[in-house]
Image (tube, rainbow, N blue to C red; front, top):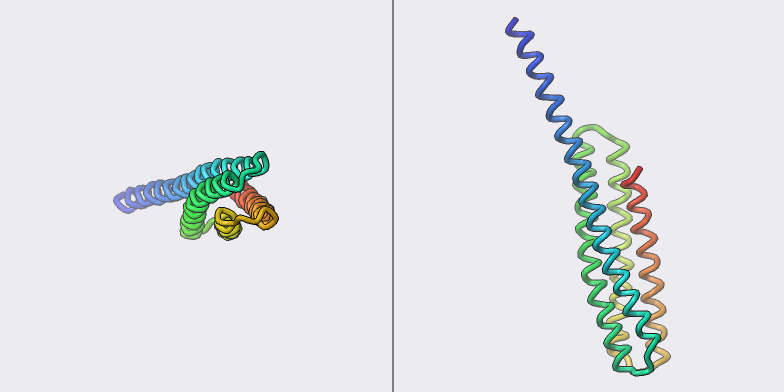
Length: 166
């Protein structure tokens, strides 16, 4: 009788622990998504600032808008790092409970967030150059490249979210 009682108690404990771990994976995925949303908002602000560059003829204003966009992207990059970290934590938790599908998807999401972060870093570099550039042709080049990098980052971010949603 004692043995049966301890067996039942052990089963309840294991089921409870497994449920807690599954909940932890879900929570980390949700946190990763929230950081994605925060990063995406900052990216939209950055794109708006870049668009503002095209509505003025003043080099000083263009440099200022480029600097604003750079600042927004620096925040977005930080949030992408947090999203990447949460995806990494979800991967580890999924591994602990033997959920290989969730583990693989979280790993892929982590990689996509990392790649998005690298693209944002490249955009930041272009905007940093633009914020000190006086030549209008060169400014156009920096702004165009920054937008290209941002669009590539958004694609990677969306791939990450697709992985987390599967």
